[in-house]
Every structure is written in C-alpha cells, then in structure tokens.
Image (cartoon, rainbow, N blue to C red; front, side, top):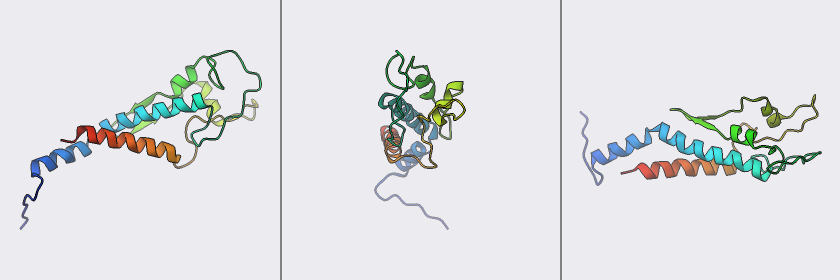
Amino acid sequence: MIRIEESGTPVDALADALEVLDDTEALARAMAATASELVRSTFSATRSPDGLPWRPVVRPRAGIGGALLLSGDLRDEASQAFPDAYGFVLLVESVKGVHQRGSRKRNLPARPFYPVATSLPASWEEALGAAALRSLQARLP
C-alpha cells in the first residue's frame, strides 16, 4: 500500500512546481536568448568563445568595426538561436560560415564564434545555467 501525506508543502504546490520543471520549451527559449547574446559578444570582442583572440584582419575594410563585421550580416545570422522542446540550435547556413573553421585553401584563418570543443567554455556554461535558473525562478509559484 502507498501512502502520501503532506508535510509542509501542499501537494498541489509541489505538483505545480514540477510542471514548471517540465516546461523545457520555456527553458530552451531563455537559454537560446542568452546563447544569442553570447555569440554576438564574440563578434564585438573579436574573440572565440574560449576567449582566444581572433587573428587580426590583414587588409582591414571599412565597415561597422572589427573582423567579420563588414556589414553585420554574419553576426546577425550566426546569433539567431532556434529553440524547440528539447533545447536550441545555433546555425549559419550561408557560405560565410567558413569563418567558424577557416579554410587553408582560401588562406582564411578560423575565427570561431561558436564553441568548437566538445564541452562549453565555463563562461558560456555559467551564463546558460543562470538563464535557465532565472527562467525557472520566474515561473515558480
């Protein structure tokens, strides 16, 4: 026989809190917004997500400033995060995505704007975790 008793927190409130934890889409949206900001920051800082500086541009061109910021189109495309029920995706579909990994054939250095390792840099992990926590706290009863 199973017996459930209340002890401090009403069972209904606990059930409501568990429903909040099960709302993965809301968590994904919050984390996607933070990931978008993190990607944009790599462009403005001209550094990879790990904090390594991008190789300077050999022939600087006029634009809105910094490497890969001639028009801002790549930054804008790269920083679009697409959330779903399971998480989110960052994706560059244009040919300009070659800047992420570089090209020996074109003598183009890698200037990564997405993490390249199998794990997130600590700063990204912390920022995404904080976004998830804020999202949960905002919806708790």
